[in-house]
Image (cartoon, rainbow, N blue to C red; front, side):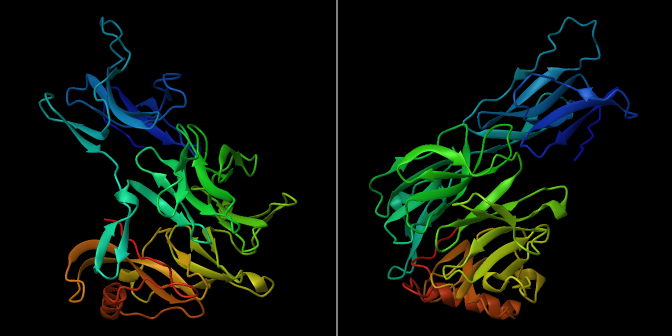
Length: 401
């Protein structure tokens, strides 16, 4: 992706690469003399989103180092006779993440976007008919319980480190450390290992394994390719994950790794599909079509005759492109897909809140829900306070607020 910026003589461009790096390049307005603007200035390079001041004398850009995004300014290097240091000067400093700078027309002010990532872990209390803090309301995401319900793993925000603890919050232990960023962790069926997606600076996202007791995360393959969303087979012998190429959809597919033999194979007919989720009974696999976000279902037990089945709503309003929070109920009979409900008022709950609610439907049949029925159905699922156990739906319903 190239982004052209106006300048008196040169036009910087940003080239985003697959390995989580981005560098600012410079070229003349006619496209000639292209070269990297700041070669070797930061390793790995992570610069983007630059803009010129209105007089064209300074260039302001965004640079991310050790997870912190800040703004830098540098003079126009074409005026070589001026006694001005060509090195960039830092303009902002954290903990707020700064980006997308826009100078004012008079050049005296700089408008930016400042973000400080935070989350709040919550659970739905059926008695109180409301969401209440869980584990003290810590700033965390990507929460998953072990199969026996005794342990929980989550990613701390904003440092994106992986933690585990008992379900009551005791025995809390940090599993990964910066500069690695962790996401989408999943427990092995026996509760002894955790598979997760992790990224080091300048490297693509990879799938790692780590013991519940800690230690060094181990990449499951040596390949320098983007790997995402690991999921365990019910017997714990196989990991499925997505290999994703953002530029070539035919190079995006689901991989099966036999943990005993280390043999790698491609799931049949999975090109252009990623983010797999194995059902607890081992029969089905959920995944997402890369690009349009459609939710797909595959019969793993009948691979020879199986085809991916689209579990999609009739209305475009009901689709949630790119969402990855899909999962199975504990018995594998129901499928979850988040449904955006802009505004819900429930007489039973008596609360108003912007939320993303969880909708459940049977895996065997694609739902046919009109928008009006969908709203009523999701509201009813929440207001009834379902915290179902055993072979039905999950023990709790959470929201992203």
